[in-house]
Amino acid sequence: MTPAPAPNKKDQQGFVDRYSLWNETQYQARDTALARVREHKLEVVRIGFADQHGILRGKTLVADGLASAFKNGITMTSTLLLKDTSHRTVFPIWQDDAGFGAGHMTGASDVLMLPDPATFRVLPWSPHTGWVLADLYHTDGRPVAVSTRTILRTAQQRLNALGFEFIAGLEVEFHVFRVTENPMSSSDAGQPGTPPKTALLSHGYQYLTEERYDQTEAVFDLIRRNAEGLGLPVRSLEVEFGPSQFEVTFDPAPALQQADNMMLFRTMVKQVCARHGLHATFMCRPRFSESMASGWHLHQSLVDVKSGENCFMPQPGERISTTGQHWIAGLLQHARESCLLSTPTVNGYKRYRPFVLAPDRIQWGQDNRGAMIRCLARPGDQASRIENRVGEPAANPYLYLSSQILSGMDGIRHRLMPPEPVTHPFESEAERLPTSLSEALNAFRAGGFYTGQLGQEFVNYYSTLKQAEWDRYLATVSEWEEREYFTLF
Image 1 (cartoon, helix red, strand yellow):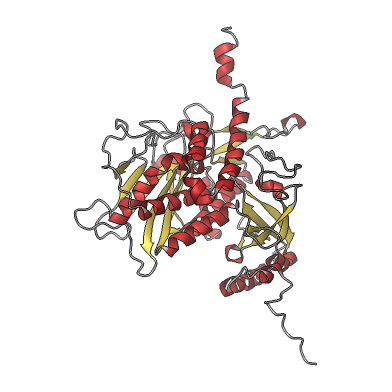
Image 2 (cartoon, rainbow, N blue to C red):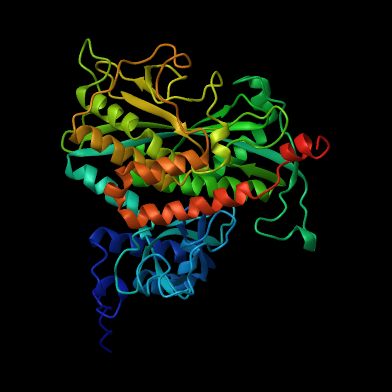
C-alpha cells in the first residue's frame, strides 16, 4: 500500500499559515515541542500569556490539543486585557466603543492566544505538564496592539534596525514567608480576597551572612532546582538585608528572552512555594514591622549586532562610551514618564526613600548604589554596563524593558548627553522621582514621550487601568486614618 503523503505544513486552512506568522525556525521549534510532549508522555499543557500587569493567564489543554493550538491558536476572552489589579473589568465593554474604536474589544469578544513553540518547557514541579508562552492576535491576523510581549518585541526590532542588541542582566529581590493560616471561609472571597497570614523565615538584617543563608537553604534549593529545570539562567542566590528577603540574579540575555525568563521565574517561585506551605511575594514592600522594600535592578548594555562588541565599553580616560552616555541621558530624560512602567503599583513608591540603597532622584553615578543609574564600565571590559535601580519586582517585565529600550534609543537618536555623575546622591539638586502612583500616572499622560513611541491608544489604555487602581486605593479607609482620626474627632 502506498503511504499517504505527509501533511503540508503550509496548509492554508491554519491561522498561522493563512497570515504567514511563522518562519522556518518556529516550525522547527513546533516539531521539537510536539516531540517532547510524546517523549515525556505529558498529559496537559498550560498555555499562558503575560497580561497588562505581568500576571500569567491562560488555559490548560490536554496534551493532544497542542498541535491544533500551534496551528490555529486558542480563543480567549478579551476582557482579560481590560482588568485592573483587582481583576475587575474597568472598560465599558457593553457599549459600542470600549475605548478602542467602535466594535473593538466590546461584548467580551474573543482574541487568540498563539503559543510560541520556542518557549515550550516541561514543568519540573508538575512533570506531567508542559508550559508555553503565547502571543495575542485578533481573529483577522493582526497582533493585539496592547499585548505587552508584542510591545517589547517591536521595541527590540527597532533597536536591532539601528545595529544594536539590548542585553539585560537581572537582580530580583522578593520575600518568602511561612504560611500560618490561609483564610478560606466564604467571607474571605472577593476582589481581592483575604491574604494569607504568615511568619518570617529569618529575622533579617544580616546581609549576605552564611547563618541567614543556611536558615533558608531549603527554600533557596527549592527555587534554584526548579529554575534550572526550566532552563532559566540563574547565576546567584543571595540573602538580602530585610527579614525573609531573598535575591536571585540572572546571567545576561537579550531583551525578549530575559522578559520571558522573568515571567516564568516569578510565576514558578510563587507556585512551588505555595506547594510547600510558603507564600512568596514580589510586592515591593510587604506590611509588617521592620520590612525592607524589594527592588528589581536591571543591568543593561548594548552590543553591536555585526561584531558582537560591547558598545558601552569606554576608551581610556572615559567613564563610559559616547553611545553609553547617550543611552544614560535618554533614561534620565524620560525617567519620570517611565516610572509608571518600571514601578506600576501604589506600593512601589514607598521604596523611593533616601539612605536605603534605593533611588529617590533622577541621576547617575559611577559605581554608586544611591544613584538611580549606576555605571559599571571600564576600558577593555566586555562586561561594561549600567544598572538602573528604579524598578520594582512587581513590574510587567515586557513594559519595564521596553521603557529602557525606547528611552535609550531616544538618547542615541538625539545625541543627548547626561550631566556630570553624582557622588552624593541624596544631597544633589537632581529632579525627584515621582512620590506616588498618581504623580507617575500624571507624568506618563502629560509627557508625550510614550504617546509618540507607543501611540495614544496605549497611553489611554494603560492610564485607565492604573487610574482605576489609584481610585480604589483612595476610596479605602486605611489603618493610619483609623488610628489618626477615629478617637481624636
